Length: 161
Image 1 (cartoon, rainbow, N blue to C red):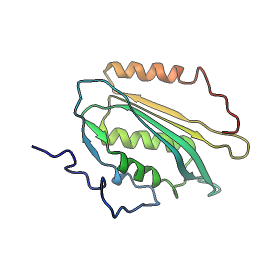
Image 2 (tube, one colour):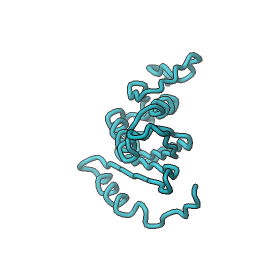
Image 3 (cartoon, helix red, strand yellow):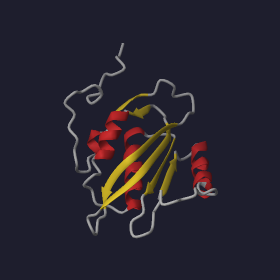
Image 4 (cartoon, rainbow, N blue to C red):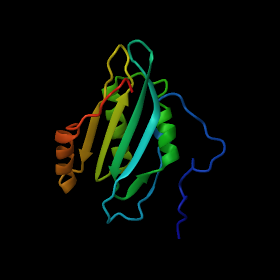
């Protein structure tokens, strides 16, 4: 019988290395015990940082990741280390959320996933890119389209965050 933590190298590791350059190789998965159930797993990272690719100035955001797992799930400590690895990575906000989503699709092959970045204002403008994906040929493909078309019908009130 396989132990639940078998194959996980970061969970419980007391000698964690925090990489400060983009590194998707730190991501780890574990088996979904309920692959026949459709359910959302949601992560909120309110202390996300990356760098502006032009000025090198820091960008701060809350990154929200929601997904419906299939066979594999992302281990949360590895996700934390992965998100931390953007700290010195220079990319536009829109690129960051798409990179995160695509890395997680390659890692887990989820039924559905969405990533929303809510970046703090710089120069008087905040940018909130949103992307999603529904597995082709499944009901989640239509869910992705519906969520994309309607994701911001009731936008939040922004008071300089």
